[in-house]
Amino acid sequence: MVSFSSSDAVLERMQRLHPKVIDLTLDRMGRCLASVGDPHLALPPVIHVAGTNGKGSTQAMVRAGLEAAGQTVHAYTSPHLARFHERIRVAGKLISEEDLTAILDEVYVANGGETITYFEITTVAAFLAFARTTADWTLLEVGLGGRHDATNVIDDPRLTIITQIDLDHQQFLGETVGEIAYQKAGIIKRGVPVVVGPQHDEALEVIEEEAAKFGAPIIAHGQHWHVWEERKRLIYQDENGLLDLPAPNLRGPHQFGNAGMAIAALRHLGFDEAACEAAVTRAYWPARMQRLKTGPLVEAAPEAELWLDGGHNPAAGAALAETLAEMPERPTHAICGMLSTKDVEGYLRPLASVISDLHAVAIPGETATLPAEATAEAARAVGLDAVVAASVGEALSDIVARDPASRVLICGSLYLAGAVLRENG
Picture (spheres, one colour):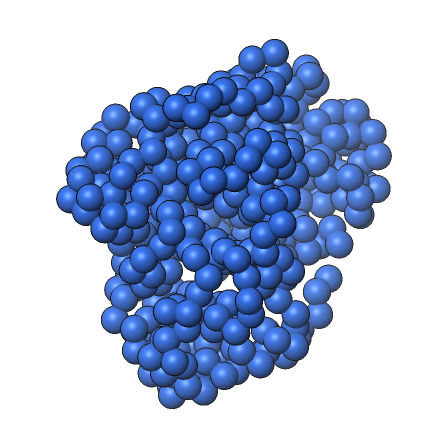
């Protein structure tokens, strides 16, 4: 268990500065940034990443490639899993508790009690930490959408990346893939190249229209670069030639597309094959088909394979199903908890063909959790046998009592994944 820290106390105060968790506008960001000297204007060159799925994995791969080339990198991502510190990586290292507490407190005081969301004020704190430490690059992952996201205050990034766009957060971003793509494409800036990952035609059309509007050169999958799997290796090709690289160390067929975006970005920025190979072989991104190998849960199921994945929308469910289908055959049981805002049946439907059954749980400590019985009902609706469990631990005990050497997948939410990582040490 992680103990309550000084930074937790400041973060708790910050959560009370706005009645809503999400309120998409950039007005408050501009005011708060100005109150601490506009640190966003003093960042090292920025690579800005938006999209529905694959943002974190792609950013992790880009960072691995840059660092292998001897570059120092700031990185900002969200949400965190076990500790808030995971969101802010300063010159390659997670921000320390002392530095995080000091910078959060400084921004909180400078804000003067004005209304601002939790994500906005903590993003300002990240920018301030980055601006005060020398680095070669800044990687920024969009929190939600893009056009009105708190990270979208950078007018002149060196490069933007748009990963796969699909249905998610429709209550904020729009009901269609095209409407969501318009929000994501809001990170495109005048004259700044944009790397575009594999997309639905509807999304690609919107991205191309926005890029043309701003004279932003497109580096698009299927047009300017191609990536595929061949003999369990990754093959990448663009106008500069062909790369034959090891398969990504992040699991799943969808990681080939994410790796392709990272390689396209690195190649555009002038980095060599060694950096591209490091991008696909050295990236680490927890709770994306992560094998749990130590901790109390593993000790409670010594013969089982335990996997953890935080995907939570229909496209993520499809990618996870494809990943499981390619793994060695083994009975697979799911432990699933989701938020009430998600398309639960849409997420579970592709998984119904690759898992044996499902134990539904509520996400501990989350007010927006879907009740376990509702998750179980959704699972039954797509043809899965499902029961309710009081906790992940109880579900795991029930599974291994019946099938001790099975594969167990804990899935459905990054918030559930975070709770598991905290409890599992």
